[in-house]
Image (cartoon, rainbow, N blue to C red; front, side, top):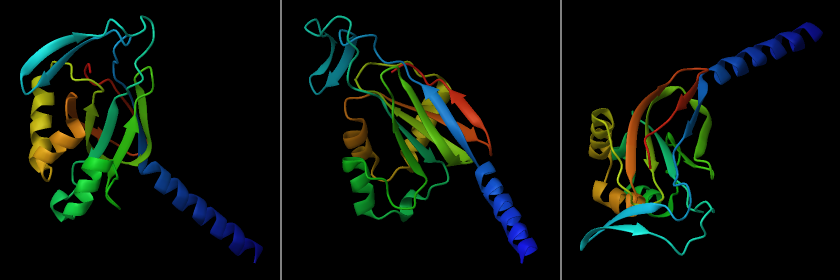
Length: 186
């Protein structure tokens, strides 16, 4: 009986180790404005303008943070019910059993996703403000590809992005890997 218990314990440990190795972590940093007095470019129906909040305290960090979404590239968005997509876009409720992960950057711009399955992902950075960003060709192509796959893209851009910047990058996470990324300025 003792041998069977030991054998079962070893088998369970091996299974647990194999499952743990099939996941990895993603660590990153976005670049928030230095203080609340930072300059922001805002766009609206009447055009665009530059804002500089001079009434904000000079050396205090903004309380608003970047949102980061990690979305597996193989997700079948077409199979998601309309109501689930709406809850995701409007209330940030991730559809059940979908490979979609969410994080909010800390006050230094750091974020992490731990123990996520090894896969190909879109990492979507939604900045806290509407400032312009420069995107390289790869980022622009990734964003265009991602938006074409989303259901109800116009609603995604209205509810999730709104007046904020949206940067999309494609990444690949391998089993047991800790991937460190530094997305563009937001």
